[in-house]
Length: 234
Length: 234
DNA sequence: CCGGCCTGTAAGAATTCGTTAGATTCTCGA
DNA sequence: TCGAGAATCTAACGAATTCTTACAGGCCGG
Image (cartoon, rainbow over all chains, first blue to last red; front, side, top):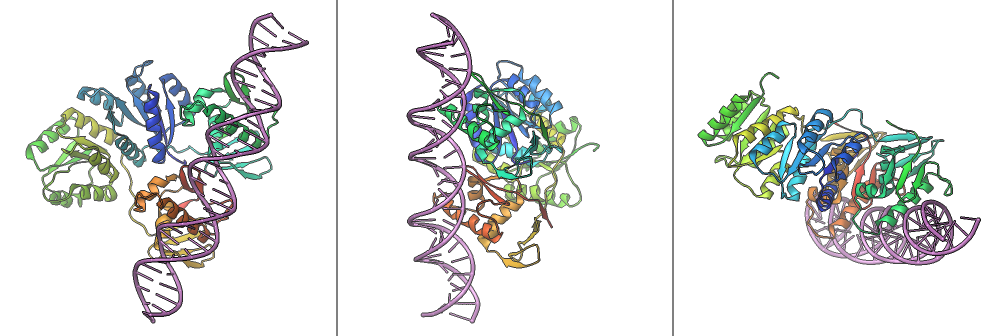
């Protein structure tokens, strides 16, 4: 319940980046995806408030996806598409989309339309909360506070929280560095890898991990990381 | 909801007719108005579900009307306008419209967009209040007074009040510096950032925050601020 | 005109977080 | 088992951002 979450599904990385930057600036959290399959996987553990969906995806029929989203998720759906025909727009809206933006778009307008969707509260999900418990720890994302088994509190920073949240949202599942970079809004910079290392290192320290033998955040050499431990969201 | 009611505000009778026909055909009830004054008179006795508003009205500034509608009515608002500039669309949406359709339009698309609005149910928009309570505090904006848990009063200034109100109106949500600047009417100047820092610093001391570990106004490095704490307006 | 309050500017301290670089660990083939 | 090379870890540094205090100009009532 902190900031509204906007997912961006588009196969062009630069467009994802642009949208992500603008929306972040406007106060939203964002998650970017290049493929429908990745996006659907993430949906199992996350419930976005607004979904921006590009119809021109290579790996799946976008309209089918929109229809499923409309039926199954509580999110508002905004189609972003290069197809400007009226008929396209009508069928998109009829399948359950809430808005239809034509490429090329203006960032300011996209932001305004996302805001309009969030504003109608259509996206209120009752049970969603921002607290997770795991292995004796309690992470309160709304307060940026981590509580250990004895109830002792310590603060974590925004950057640390992003990583921690990523782990807790997909426990016991491999998270590749590429995914991480995407989710953490990392600029496509090459040196971002090192920054991630450091973030994780700091997080490990804060979780009291033994560097030689981490119990919670396991690194998979050459692939990514895995968060072990049972997570319960509240 | 039996048949959703759609109002059509446009000064050209033929357009009203076209829209009315198409919407009736699609299963809506419609009411047409050629002037804002007529429309407002009708609003006193009827509560439409969706309002189509033409911005090019002769007798009133359309955007003002949209803003009032957004604040006072629970209806979804769709602006219909000949002005195609991005800036027009953005300000329209920002004033509270839910959608923006450019003339000349296709009937099928208008119908689809009206349907999309009806589908998500409408918004409750809170009216203006002047008193808020949070975490033992009570802020009285009409008197510029802040009351602590023991009923002890202290005054706050206008500038402090602006910031506090901003926080209380969007609790537990990230507020970016850009948003703040926008709301507080800050000149785009670079030095306004520092002024904001100072305002917040002063507000924090007034709220008795521990500088090392603020509980209510949390800063998100590189992004903005977040106000924690449950707020109730009265 | 004086004095108090409000508010922005300036400046130095403090914090966050990415970058660098050397150390460490891992994989794989010899 | 050993060694080379790649990947990862972490301590230290520094740039950017934010916090706080001090100060000055503006406004208003007396």
